[in-house]
Image (cartoon, rainbow, N blue to C red; front, side):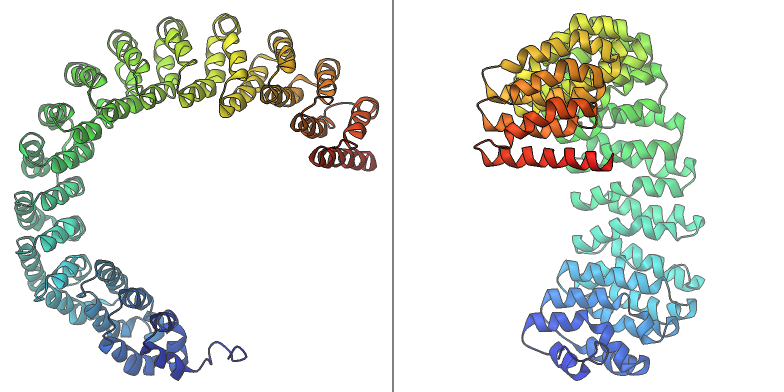
Length: 588
């Protein structure tokens, strides 16, 4: 069988496999439909293969899903766009099946084919299909119908357009909640194809029906589309039709899921209605959501607080939003406080220096001392936004004591976040301030109990040496690091070696040879094999930094000694380093 060319693979076998009892064989055959079609030719594909697929009543969802996917790209195999309509009948059948993922894929393929069809073919074949699905006895067909109206509508003549709008209106009031949900989900797509005259009447009427639905799942999908609808309407129409619905939902809807969706959509709606209605209607609605009795709603609202403040003037933000933010900073839910902490720093540039010092700094401090580590983390990671507004002096007076406290936090992830922030803080504080307040901390982290902290601390020293220069590092880092190389615990000694290897390229050849290399050679006589093979790896990294004479007189003898070590790993890395020296010698 493998000797036969793929296009000449016996078509009869593939077609037989479409009827086989084995699901895997049927699936393989469906996935090779394009091969069958190429071998049959365009005419036979239209007259034999497609009708066969239309009648194929396979009951396995995986096979049906593969078929729905394949048919979406089948236009070239039936003779091009002029024959695209022959693909509609099998997809119509698939759009009515019970399994949701098969229906969705069939609708996706119908939309893909419809987007390529000619206008007269759409009117003749696609629109009747949409009407048939809409009138389907089983709700699954009506659910699928909602997803293809936006393809059928633009090319229809005016009387047919009116009929399609009317049918969609009926789908919005269908007895089955699943159909109404589909209508709500696709309303934005359908509205985008409709003339503006009918937007205000027909579409807004449908929107109002959906927002008054007794099922909260329908209402929340209607709310989800409100920002997209708002952008299609003129601002005054948006204020008249959409704003009242949203304001009502924010204060009265009994379902927290609907209010949650309002909290997510409110910011986008502000852009559609303009500044004045935002101030008068949406700000009070947003303040209510920030004080909602459901934590999920408060989380969604808190996550948008900085974005919302950006579209208001500082006075309005201080008057309406800030009191809510103060309440949220001591919210009973840690997730609400975490959501607030992740965005609150962005409010500083919006409110300006004085308001930040007066109102936001106390909130930052309370969040920095929060018992939940994620809250503290979110504040630490955005400190630079505040520094740009209030300046380093104030930042150091107000927030630095809290940062120093966090550097010894019992949660290692918080300590890690502080370490990663230190180089940025150092560049902003300047060398003098850094030496006074943070220098000792940087050394302390090298002996932390958590490996990730020690690793980050070693990297931190390298970044500080780059920031303040080799002379400063020689005075403040190198002596203290070298003191620690004799720590009784071998894991700490390994961290120090790591720090030395990172500092060497920054410090340059002279300091490396006079200060760092002797310490490394001493470490090569350590009793722990892990230390010794790390010395070998490190010496390999030092070869490009130091002079050739140093390599021959100091590094090579040390590596030769290590290459005769009893431990296999030590010998391996020592020989690897020696090989590296030989390669450098040969190339030079």
